[in-house]
Length: 117
Image 1: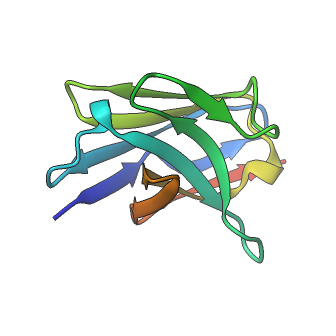
Image 2 (image 1 turned 90 degrees about the vertical axis):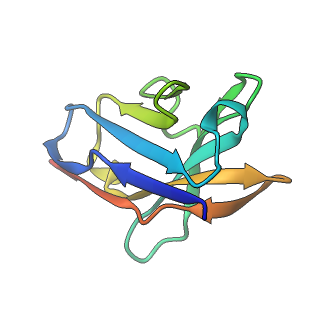
């Protein structure tokens, strides 16, 4: 079955960087799929952070525009989220997801990102 496995989270100081990875398997081909990163902070709703469509088009939340970059490695069937100039408000569990008919239908288990001030 389809699986998405995130990695790369951790604890970083404000202003630092992290790169999250999401490995797809089970018949999910990231190269031709619409993919996204979401995050959920304690007590808050899940929010869409960045999207990468099969045609290469990208979209970002205003709060991360210019700091985060979504990309993929087709050979590795892996989705990435490069996060630079991290802020304490970026602290959350980050999930990758496949987007199908404009809705996420598969999520990974998530990876924790904690940014200290």
